[in-house]
Length: 200
Image (cartoon, helix red, strand yellow):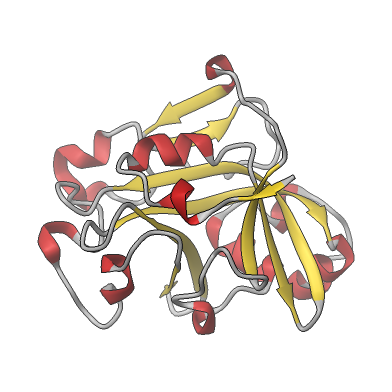
């Protein structure tokens, strides 16, 4: 197992990175407790020419400022006033690309994940959705800007290569406002995984 380095995140093609993150592992060590799992669903967002991306056309706000930093840091934001979503900034500084982690298959610290989610049984409802992933992993807005090569939140390559025929590429979720960009097949899922989110 190898922790993903800065060089993995700073490459120019956010769609390629999003695909390659399927089968990688994400971990958090919060208050000394290790939790994590295998990434089974992602979405790519391109700052330069993607109407669905928060940083489209160089839009800088207090929320999106982290997107303009060099890749390899966390972009965490709140939706519906309830859920935090965890994104990985990619590319070089000022490009403002990001990958949303939408679902994981839990592998480490499952008892702690159950506690955080107030669940008694391990089912896909534990981590099958971007807001559920962050709850289970203990990620919150205070982790905005976290270096993803640190020992707080990090990703690992455990030597697994996902064949092309095991990947499903489809349009992203909840971006109908983005016109033609809403149709881009930039949501990636692991085929036949029970842990991917159900949203179409």
